[in-house]
Each structure stands twice: as structure tokens, then as C-alpha cells.
Image (cartoon, rainbow, N blue to C red; front, side, top):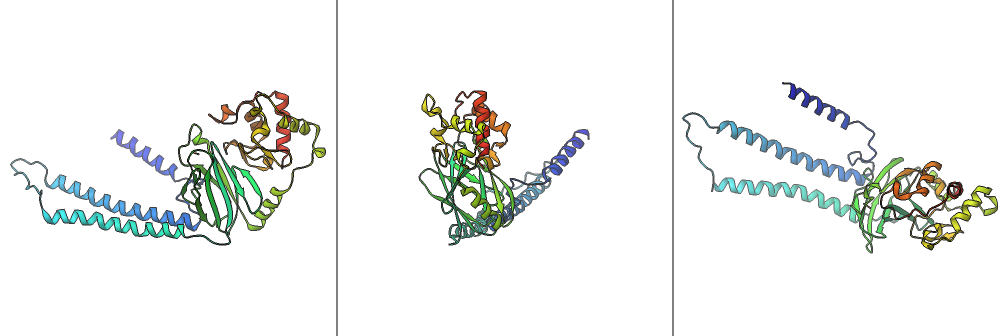
Length: 338
Ligand code: CUA
């Protein structure tokens, strides 16, 4: 009896804790009509599967009891070659597949033809291992934080800069691959404000699991304010503190090898134009750094600059051997980019 009680307690524990909210990254808590379509499709297939499971289990249990070996009982008659049964269990799965296929194809078509003319255009580009987000109409390039307005359709064009990644924002939209040289698209309308977790869903190398992002859905006016703020030019050099100016100098410094210079990979408006790493305009205002892996704080940024690979295994940003003074100055400068 004791092992059964232990098992029951364990199942109860898993069952109870598994249902505890909030659900930052669950497809079962959809917040857009697109995610709801996917959720209802899943639930329908789940219940069909459940029906099949119950029927099969009943059959198995019934047959086990009805035809069990008994003293003096004759062997049951084999059913091999029973035409009626063969036809029945060929047709039944075919009917089930039709019931699954029709709504699935309907959702695929609905999604593929969804191309609202007033949609906000966003380009999402997967990199090993961070996310680039571009808003061509607004002139904004940012990383790891995706800002969206509530109630307006968004059309996200998905690309990759290197290997295949997969854009996955479970509560807002399904997964879709990001492939170099191919334009995939994902269209949905965020209908609730808030913060939503996203994740790369295609194995893309050492730090695949560390390739995360956040989507922030704002009310329309707040989104406009964000966009206006993010297009503003950074403060001119004269307005920087002495420490921030030292940071800017360290940022600009051409090191040896030259690929170890910040400006080789990063862009800051009016300072540099690197494109290999995240664009750093307004980096001080972002919630996360290092591919959405750590929060954007002075301490985290300092640890990141000190040794990126220790934080994000395989990081393409190398340890460029900055001195502690340079790190302090760079943190002050980068955090001032707001
Ligand atoms: Cu990018 Cu996995």
C-alpha cells in the first residue's frame, strides 16, 4: 500500500504545482486570436486523442478479462482475416484524420492569407545567440526587447543572420523558423498589454537555450511614446560626465586585433556603425542584455564585459581583456544611452 500512497502523493504534487500560474511561456494561455486558433486546434486534437485512448484502453481491459486463461476453457477463436473488422479499423482512423486535417488546413490558410494593410512592420533577425528587431517605418533598430502596440496587427518578417533559428512567442503566436535568405512571416494582433516571454525554438548551437527575448505590449499611446523616445539621438559628447566620456573613448578605441574593438561590431548613432553585434542605441533603456539572458543592470553589464563567454557559453562577443577602469567607464557610458 505504501508505494501506491507515495506515488499518489507525488502525482498530486506534480498535478497541483504544474497548474500554478502565472504562465509566462505557455501556449495554453493564448492572448491573441492567432494563438487562440492554435490552442483550440490543439485542444480538439487532444480530445480526439483522449477518445481514442479511452476506447482502446476499454477494449484492452475487456479483452484481457473476457479471454483470460481459465481452467478447462477452450482457446478463443482467432479473428485474423475478419473482413468487417479489417474495414472498420481502416476507415475509423481515416475519418479521424479527416476531422483533424480540415480545421488544421483552415487555420493554416487563415494565417497564410492574413496580411492586413495597416499592420506594423517589424523585422526579426535571429543571430547566434540574440535577437535583432528592426522597425523600418520608425527607423528603430534594437535587440532582445520587442515592443508592440496593443490592438494593431503586427507583421513580423523573420530572417536569420546565420543558422536556422525559430521565433517563438508562445502566448501571442506560434513558432516559425528564421532562415537565412528566406522571408518567413508571422502576423498577429496583440490584444492584451503586458510582458511576454519569447524563446528560440530551433537548436542553433551552444547557447540555443540562452537565446531569449521579451515582448512588451503597450497601449497605443505608450507605444508611440516609446518609439519617439527610441528614435531620439543620444546626448552629445559635451553633455556626458567625465566617466561617461572615458567610456566613450574606450568604446571608440581601436584595439589589436581590430576585431576586439567595440566599434567593430556595435553601432551607436553618431559614433559607430558595426552590424555584427546588437545595435546599442538606447541600450540603457533595454530590460535585458546578452541575448535576453540577464537583466540590464550595472553589475550584470560589468560581468558581461569582463567575460562574456562565462555568462553565455559560446558567445561570439569575445573577452577583449578590458581593464577594471575601462569596464567601469564603459558601464557608465552604455547605461547613459537612454
Ligand atoms: Cu537560435 Cu536556437
